[in-house]
Image 1 (cartoon, rainbow, N blue to C red):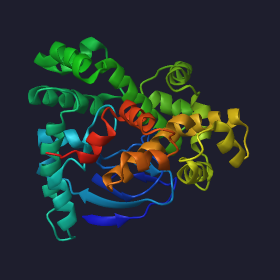
Image 2 (cartoon, helix red, strand yellow; image 1 turned 180 degrees about the vertical axis):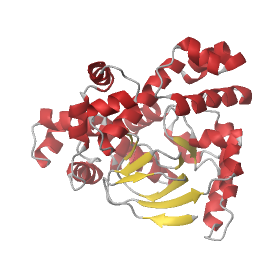
Image 3 (cartoon, rainbow, N blue to C red; image 1 turned 30 degrees about the vertical axis):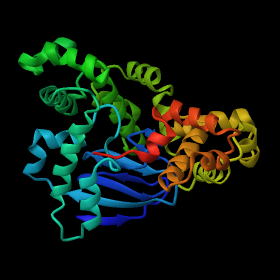
Image 4 (cartoon, rainbow, N blue to C red; image 1 turned 120 degrees about the horizontal axis):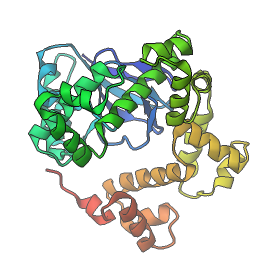
Length: 349
């Protein structure tokens, strides 16, 4: 089912069906399963059941497609869109002409399963891990096992036995292709799910510890703090900040208004009525990113819009406060990996 969503800022939306988000408007960041994302432009985002999404500003407009449970999701090629390992499952919308055509033509009566087929093909074309298709299938076979068994404290030997003949090969593929060990992936999954239980559940910390296979709650407390930087009680308190907290929205509004001319921490600290140190710490704690990185992302976002609209590199540089065009060009190349002129003229396959 296709619908238009105008989400409330800081409200937690739990995903109960396989879901695709195509963000039409918005200036802030997203949070999915306690991880913040600030570079979601020109992407189609896919979320699995059991995840949650939170929009950190109040100006988002989203095209949402929810897919019914059906045989389509038993297809191993489709699975990669919804069970992504390291970050959001997404594809590059700007680079997928089929996706653009489908979504521009789609209506409520359209067979929305078609967008899954298109996106799946494009995901493999992007090849984010640089792997063979058979390796991708093995990678996500392991992910399925972890999603089912994450509450168990499995050893590498036990993980290998669950993967049967592919056990040792899977460990090598994860390290080489994904850049993470299977054991660490299992720990990350357990941490995220325990965070959900603490933030959104009604169980005591001791009950959460027992539920996640910890025989000693104090060991759970130590492990949780080591991995997250907060004790379970501190994390639960931090997660219960009221939805009407406007700090993040106010910060995004300031960045959008002033990023072309103001790049100093002191300017934004004064506007937010905080000391520079307090602002820096609060931004890092709430958004897991520095203020300098947020400013840089706003600069790149504006630059890309202007370049796509046909503005000259010189005009973009002047608009964004760079003294010389070559300074802007160096900045753009450093942070995007391509030149501004290549970005402006790129033709996607």
